[in-house]
Structure formats: C-alpha cells, structure tokens
Image (tube, rainbow, N blue to C red; front, side, top):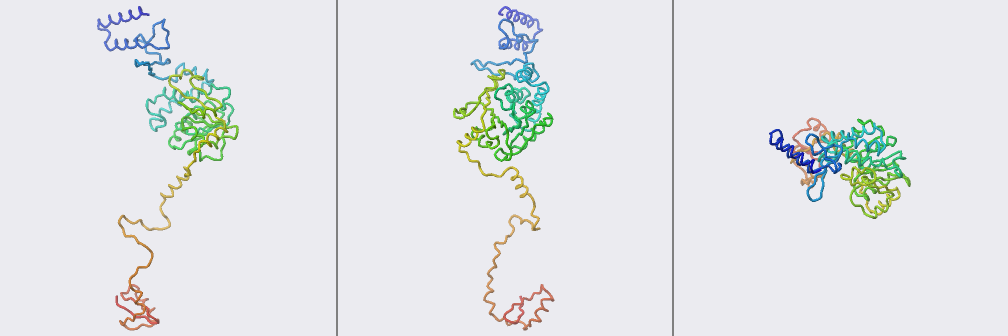
Length: 393
C-alpha cells in the first residue's frame, strides 16, 4: 500500500516539474489520498487516490474534523444502485412505485423553491430522498405487526409537505389516505403532487385534527408534529375504537412513561435500513387506541374553544361584505357624530304657558291653510291652547 502511494506521488512530481500538472490539481489529489472512503478495503488502493476518477456517488463520503467527528459530504442518490436495492429488495416495492418515489423527490424540490414546505437548507433531491422519503417508507420492511398492511383507511395528522403521508400512499395503494393540516398553502402543494403522481387513494383536508368529526380511521400517522401527549389529545377521537393504531415517527429521547404504553418501538436505521445510520435517528412508535386515550386523559390538556377554519372564513367574509341594509356613508375621520337620541334641553318647557302677543290670532282652519302654502316658511307657530299664534323667527 505504501509503495503504491509512493509511486503515485513520484509520478505526480515528475508531471509537476515538467509543467503538465497544475499545482491546484496536485493539491486536490493529495487531499483525496489522505481521506479515503471507508467503503473500500485497506488492501487495495482507493479509487479516490486517482485524479482521473471521481469519488463513487453510491458510497457515502465523510470529512473528519480531527476530533473524531465525521460529517457527511453528500447524501444518497435516488437513482443509485444502493437506492434501487433498498426499494426493490429491502422494502419489497415494485419498479413503478420506485419511479413514483423518485419523481416525488423531484416535485418536492421544485415546489420548495416557491413555497417553504420543508427546510430550504440544502434542499436537494438527495436530501429529500434520504431524510424524508426513505424514513417514511422504511416501515414497509416491517411485516410482523405492521397495521398498515391490513388497514383500509389512514389519516396523516400534520402532514406538512406530505410526509409520511405521500410516500406511504405510494407504498400502500390499497389504503385510503387523508392528509390533514391547518396550513392551506402546504395542502395545495400536497394535492398538486398527489395529482401529478396519479395517487387516487389520497385526499387532503384543511383543518385541525380536533375539529375533524364524523370519521374513524384504522391507522393514524404523524411525524414530529408535537409532543405525544398533545398529539394524542388532538387526534384520540379519530381512531377506530379498540382496533385503531397510532404510528408516530419521532427522534431524540422519549419519556419512559410514554414508552411503556407502546406495543412496538423500532429504530428505522437499526431494524430496516442500515444505510441511514449516519443521517436518521428516527424511530417508529406504535400505540393502540386505548393507550392513546389514556395518554390524552393523563396529560390534563384542555382544548381551547375556538372557531373552526370554516367558521373563521365565514366570519371574515361577513366582515368584508358591505352593509346593504343602509346606504349611509361612513363618516370621515374627525366628522361630527350624534352623541345620543335624547332631546336636547333648549329651555322651551316653560314657554307652553306663555302667551305670545305677536301677530294676528289664527283659527284651526287657517292653520292648515297656512302650513300648506309653504312648509319652509320663516314663520313658526306654537300651539298654546285651542288657538295658534304666529311668531316671527
């Protein structure tokens, strides 16, 4: 191994001295010879030692920071042989399903440039494939005890950009999926992707889980939506009594009191797809309907009374609609406003018993004739008793 490297370095030095090899190219080769791929054996030279061959895309590369921490340079390509082997052999999917999943990774990247449905940091096809699609469908390798194999209906609570709902709908075409989220723009994207993928078993619902009534599902799924007790409080009424199951994708540490209520706790990388060991720490937890209700009850969380999304939209339309009952214009800022409907005190109460001496006395008959002549007359009449006395204003 050392002799091979020494010969390679000597050959590069000769090329460098002769002027046929640029210094920059030599430095790149030297860097690659130091960082060899862990997927190659130590008995043979790595292909990365030669500048004429790029690093193998199907095998992961890592950078070492010198402190024992390795960071991944690039993620798995959906079109690589490794991805194809995982989908067709490990997960037992068909070639058409594999093509749909690859197309889904492309659609997510295209839509994410317009609407933020997943994190835009390093949003590439490889990132979507390895961090979102493969973890969502990893449970296809779970044959014993997987409720999705026998379920007819499934609701994906808080689907966001369509995960894990859309990949699962591709993997389980005989199951009817309802993808639920409170963010309307994300559901618009999800519905468009489902239509382009020709997924007839997918429907979307704009609303909150606690507001969805009148429907029961065999399975409910969710991926990092919220805390488990909060999620169970939101969707406990959506599961079929006794037979319903909750599958929850979650990472990090979980309370032991929650884990005691699970019927299965499976690591995605350890149990199903070992190739995701460096990038995925997610686990899939399974809860029966009885335990979901018990978690919600013990959490003590009380759902706030608030208007549904449909009621909120009706309220907005009602506020925006003009008042058709009256044609009154809105007063401008600073305009005069009537304080009250009570009559103003003008000091006329004491004048009822007064006798005004001005003008000739008019009879009741003359009074009607007088007012019929000119309503806007400058003369004003006050009725004292049985007679009307004209008065100049």
